[in-house]
Image (cartoon, rainbow, N blue to C red; front, side, top):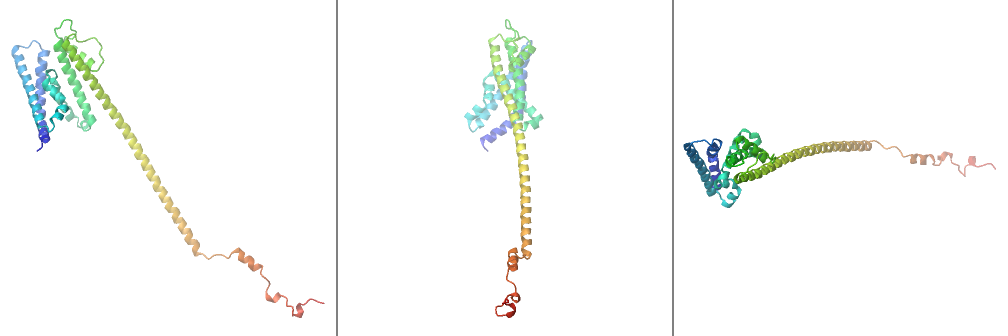
Length: 284
């Protein structure tokens, strides 16, 4: 069995366990932020849960890297997975595996590349907004002059930032919060670009279908016209052949020139004058 086949089997086998681990990680990450009054015991348990989920991500990445035939290409095409393992701030991006649930529910849309892109973009947008809201609230809460004090404020700020609207009513004041804002802005530009490209792809496909239908209809008309012309040509040929055969079977009439020559011939011998006949001689 090849390494790529073993890696594909590993990915299929670990898809749902890693999705559950991602959910646990989200709970462990978000609970202390949403409820800062948690006791030390709960904080320790959530910390252990978070590190356990991170360890599962690390093991999955290392196994897939080991089974890859071309490890450099694997790293290049799985930069998000590498960031999930290396950068603690981006660990929640592993939650994008949850969009597989949407793909299962929407099998018709998931059957085409554009449908899959739409599903993943929608899931990524929601996940980025949620994670950025949590990270921003964690960075801004309790800071002097902070405007983002509740999760509702953070969620509103993330929604306006990722869509590049930016009303300016809420903005980060801490360095960590501003870095989160920069990442969210870049993610918003990328998401808008993907949405625009997906819509353009759909529009081009619709135009191509209309043109293909027009070409098919034109080809059908030309073919039908060619068939009718061929039938008409055969009919004309048959009529010509019948007319030629009928003329050959009928006797031909005497030519007018022959009749004229016959009428101008000399009179019969009985009416011609004979020099030796006395009855025909002229009187003296």
